[in-house]
Image 1 (cartoon, each protein chain N blue to C red):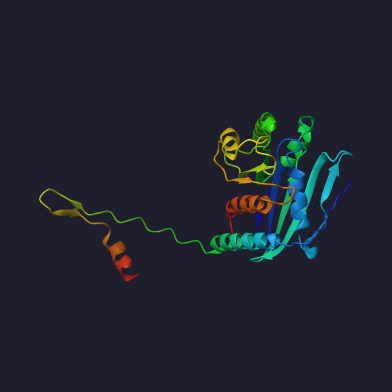
Image 2 (cartoon, rainbow over the protein chains, first blue to last red):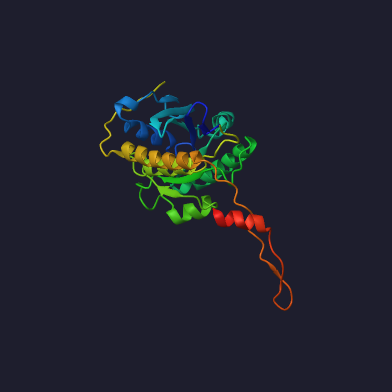
Length: 200
Length: 70
């Protein structure tokens, strides 16, 4: 996906929230949506099963208005976390500009975190992205759970964050850490804005 | 099934986010729109000094004069 289009004066960024099932990806988008001023509220599309599991993906368009002469849009997506929706995850990753990996802090979910991260890397590579260089931030969610049930941030970082990318503790259900995470990935994506090959 | 959540932006989190993003974009766009700088002329070679301190080779004298006039 082209991040900046000088011809149409548009900046479009696609950010995908990735992670294992029930880690809180949809909750992140719901919190962002809840904080949008009315005039900027489009429609958050969320396709879920009866038990509230994301069936296909969530999509939240963020129209930020005209910034420095460029119509700026962020498109936030989530992927379905369950392993059997692999094809959907690949589809959602097409044209991605940045990834937020939402890890579940619960100790018993560590294996799922690792599996999902490996899945992310494999799918990024398959889509032609370099998993070692694509803008990525880690979010360690559910920090509000009792300490006996969750891994420490250091442990999560050591196990999952081998690239040493920015990481954030979050409690997405109450909004803690959600915008910090979004701000970080946005900055990383925007920092990669590059001049087109030719300009007139 | 489409779900929507409607709450007020009590903490101004979105406003802060927008301000940060706007700043970053302004910075980037400004740097990208700055006319590209002319490629700096290759640094003039240090005069080659032969044994005994005698300068035996100067860089092109016309280039040096033009550079001085800038």
